[in-house]
Image (cartoon, rainbow, N blue to C red; front, side, top):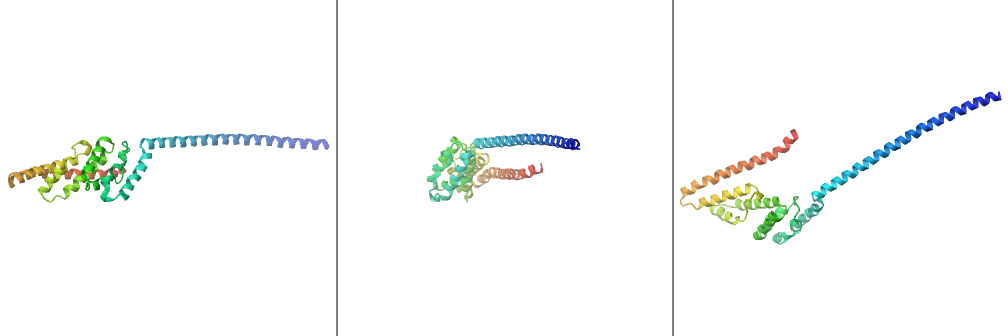
Length: 239
């Protein structure tokens, strides 16, 4: 009986030991595989995150966003707090004067220049010439020139007013940097000025036909450009 009991105990002990060994081995293998998989996944995630961060930082650096943000804030502060009647005195504080490489839009910079033109045309002309020739803000200069021209021409009531305005705007360059609409508009005004100098009313009427037709074509061109610009997002959305 004692021997039988010993044999049964030995068999049970052996079975439990083997079961424990196999369970431990399986759990160890599963735990090791899980640990390896988690480590690999975590390493890949960290690597991707670092690569994305480096890539975004590089793009922001190329776009000069780190400089652009404080320049935007500075321009907004100038527009909000600089005295309106002394804006011409603050033109040299605009960001392009101390950062010629800036090319991203500067909110309110155009408004500052347009408003300053009413006080000191000479200073604004010098600033626009600087923007065109020494910086990457040609688009800003073209926008300001177009706004100044439109504001000046819209106030004309007679042919003499148009003639005087054309003379006053003679400083605006006729170059691709300022776009097509502005030079065309000034050429039309110049034609009106020439028609005003005709020797008779009949000749004036005949001479005015050309600028009137050109003005009509310009209006249609601008309208088509605006329609194309507005339909672009819709077309992209449908595509």
